[in-house]
Image (cartoon, rainbow, N blue to C red; front, side):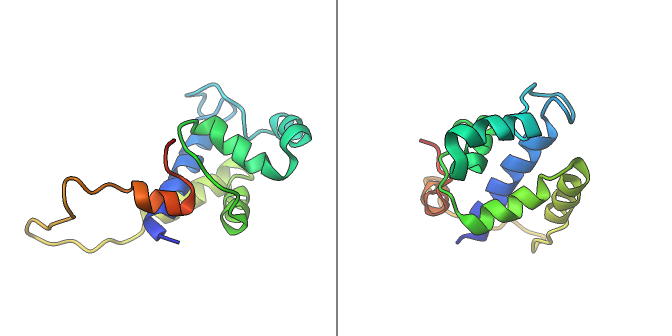
Length: 122
């Protein structure tokens, strides 16, 4: 899987979780709290994480990649773990150049790469 697409998916889930009502109350949702999980699990069972994720990022389309789901659920267990993972992602070192660098064609987008992870918008 493309690590850029995975990072984007992680950032969406982490930032969405941290913006929920019980955290920073930026979006007013509570998809990742215990009550929502119990309710959604009765309906969607094995797709619980997908329902929570879609609630946070409705425009995303994702498939149930079990490794990704397990990794994200561990990071979304509480505020501290979410903040730790967000800090880890922020510390990722990218190579830099003192001059302009070509990042690709203007017509190129991440849709194909995101589709491989199931994260492309519908």
